[in-house]
Amino acid sequence: MTSPLGAAGELAIRSLIERAPLASSLSDAFKNAGFRLALVGGPVRDAILGRLGNDLDFTTNALPHETKKILNVWAENVWDTGIAFGTVAGKRGDTTVEVTTYRSDNYDFESRKPEVEFGSTIEGDLSRRDFTINAMALELTLGAPMFLDPFNGLQDLSNRVIRTPTTAESSFSDDPLRMMRAARFASQLNFSVSPEVLEAMKQMCGRISIISAERVRDEFIKMLLSEHPRIGLTMLVETGLAEIVLPEIPKLQLEIDEHHHHKDVYEHSLTVLEQAIMQEGRLNGPNLVIRLAALLHDIGKPKTRTLIAGGGVSFHHHEVVGGRLTKDRLKTLRFSGEVIDDVSKLVTLHLRFHGYGDGEWTDSAVRRYVRDAGELLTHLHVLTRADCTTRNKRKADALAATYQSLEERIVALMEEEELLKIRPDLDGADVMRLLKVKPSSVVGEALDFLLELRLEYGPLGQDRAEEELMKWWSTRG
Image 1 (tube, rainbow, N blue to C red):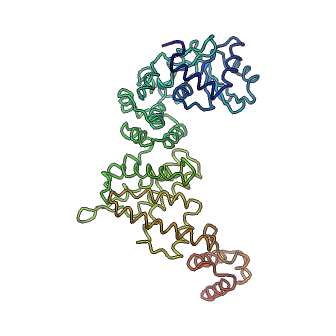
Image 2: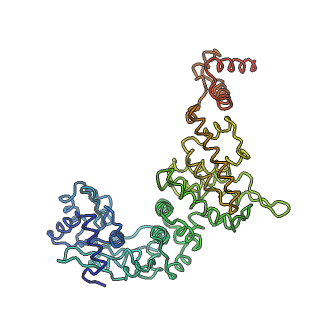
Image 3: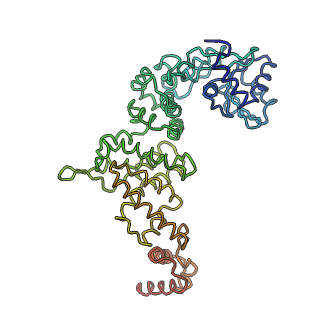
């Protein structure tokens, strides 16, 4: 459907003028050079939804080298890392633009990358896009702006549904990552996915295996950091995609929670994720590390499940096993080393609070808890609180009160000691001087001994630390 602006187009152009005034000067630059230019895809969708940002996507009949010439004049900075795929990007002020030549890609069935072919019409370009809500355009260079919607994306936007412009089978065959993108958009927009798209995802989920881990990871991150990650995660599990890209999650459906709070550990994990999200204000907003830790914290349970006489179930040391599994999975998905270390550490520590009984925390216990959490202390606070999903209000209130007392003990002790910088009262030079030894493993053993004393009793002071060190040294002969 091609039409004058209409209500949706008027809303889009008004949003474009208000949020991205530089777009009109860009369209003038292309028009003056004899080319067409249209705002396309996600920015049109977001403009209609009233959430347009400063990153704009355009499509044009200009070939990439012509686009680069125009942007070299219009933009303050230009980069052409995507020029082989027809895309040239530029930035002017706060606005970043990507301009792509009309495309009509051909895909080899077993290939991860398309054979790029440039198209001759914007309608053909729109037909190759992933979903109808991303296959709308706002033509800016043919006199009055023209709203293009050949696949009824506006209606799907109104109905809050995700469909493909062509058949879902054809779309996913072209680019299997679009199956992950369907789950991601459903989570970001709180939309449903049409039955034919879901069925195609189930039938073709195996195709995701030809996609690079990095591309899968990036879509997964966007989904997990959305407002409604449960929607996308549920979709990945129900279509079989999770079995390939994150198999530890569907495996949780086989495990019954030992406290019978949820029909399975899978549902419990999704609830923990949602409860962690509710506390993200403590972490200054959406936080990838806490969301990954919340989702993965119990993935060690399937490997540690043991039946207990009388019908119970135990999962001893599942936090340790889960920490290892988390590290392996995140490595496979090519997450950064820092994210891998932080998430696996939180998974390993997530039960630490429950090892201290009914809340009678000694100073030594508090010091060790803070030392082990390190810079992830607030993350651990959030994860531990989120992990309480019991429907028994009395028990939930008791756990919350107990953890509140722990946080208060930490604050109180931090006022007295530098808990986040706990170190022995003596350093290596002191140890070598007092023991009259050279650098060796003995120095490390002595520092470990002094650190244990520091954790157990708090700051010892120079004199007592030296006295305790010499006592320890004398017992070694």
